[in-house]
Amino acid sequence: MELAFTNRIAELKELESAATAGGLLVVFGRRRVGKTRLLTHWMGPRQGLYSQAIEGAKEIQLEQVFRDIQDRLTTSLVPKSWGELLELLAMRKGQSMFCLDEFPYLVASDPSLPSILQRWLDHHRPKNFLLILAGSSTRMMNNLFLNRSAPLYGRARKLLHIEPMSYGAFCAARRLNPADQESFTRFAMVGGVPKYWEFVEAKASAIDLADELFFGFAPYLDQEPSRVLRDEGISGVNAISVLEAIGRGAEKSSEMAARLGTVQTNLSRLLQQLLDASVLTREIPFGESPRSTKKTRYSIHDPALRFWFRVYSPHRTRWHRYSHAEKVKLLHDHASTVFEDFCRQQHPGASRYWEGDLEFDFVRADHRGPARDKAVVTEVKWKQLSARERAEIEKRLAADWQRCALRGRFRDVAFEVLDATVLKGIQRE
Image 1 (cartoon, helix red, strand yellow):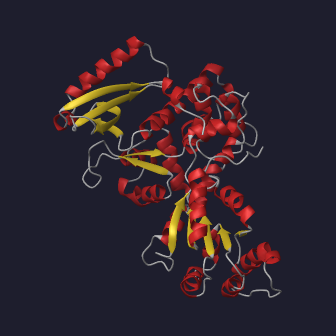
Image 2 (cartoon, helix red, strand yellow):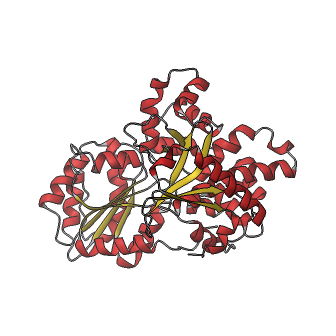
Image 3 (cartoon, helix red, strand yellow):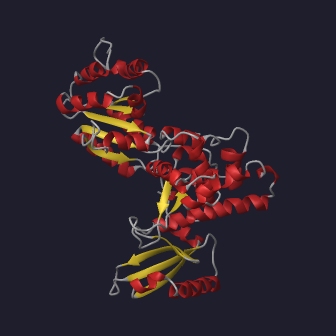
């Protein structure tokens, strides 16, 4: 069931600003995050021209784009090149806009297209004309518009990154209670990707959703990792193998290499590609420099992909033999990792900390008040804690702090325990 268009207030504001200024707007974000829905929703009332590119030979692609917009062009001419198509667009009178979605498909077939567009933007674009180039491949879009040697470098007025949506937006779209842990457990399986939300039914349980998306007959997300990696131009068994290793608990590159039977240096390039594609997140301990530390951990960024490699892949054969309690525990353990990320993201600058045999869920600096060199050490629990449990955790945090290297860098420290009651403060968006 297609959901009603929801939220995206900030993105709509940026599109309005771009329409007023004209020029080139670049829109990018991972597949199924809602780029096309956003663009078509916004462009519809404004009579903008829109075409979604296909994969194929450049001649077929050009023909497809022209057919998509032909009825809106006041000409009977049929363009034989991208240059001719752009000339036809320039003939339109008044303010106008044209969106080429899945732009990387076109460049893959015709690498000269960015140079053609550069000349058109620099010399022939009508005043106030807005050209929108959109794509799902984060790596390719970065190469096309942020690489200094690329023809379109510096030509865009703005690069608009369409991010996954929030937990509050998810609850609003599916009419769920944000304070309910079951709501968050379902969010932990679909993340902020609106396309996945279509499978969330208000009366269905989290286990029902797991069956619908992952473990049932012909599940919707069965091939999703391969699709995401293909969009990013990352191919081969190695990428899947690295993600499988991370899903099974190998957070360090040395651990991944050991599980894959290779040397650590062989993974460097692949790990960087996965980072560039926003498939992975790199973490270093709070307060350490990324240039000097070797304490690096990796995690799968998207909750749905994390579920795929952490729960679905290791348990797909045995899932139907598990008891209800066993399934609940698997979902609970996965949701706890997403909840920890969720809590950490509420505090910019916060990050995990580890050394030796101790670890804090996250640490942040608190520059408010008289003690400007104050640290806040936080532990996150995916359940509702009693007052006694909170006190015991705070006592343990204080003891761990006494043997932590960070202690010498801060004159003051506070200890914080967050549990599932945090969800009670979340509003539908």
